Length: 115
Image: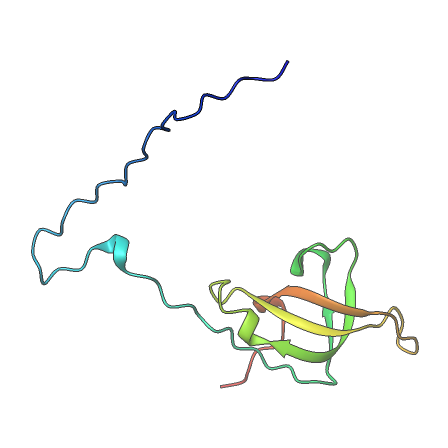
């Protein structure tokens, strides 16, 4: 059965939510402040080999050994400095290379710069 459509029927109007004004003009409303993204700091460069445990990268099912091709800090700005995108070649064994992988890795599992 096909429902009938009435011509000329007006749909209900949606109302915009009312946001109460700030109490004083010099105060910032916490809802209007956007947090600044944090850029992760890691000490890896193209050619480095990193070992990641299963829990140290997203969507992994086994430990991963990766020869780094690129670190994508530009794509990692929105993970609160906790995760970074790395691209590289999977290395199942020291003398064998595998497929190209893009991995969202935990910053704490990667080498950190020395102070």
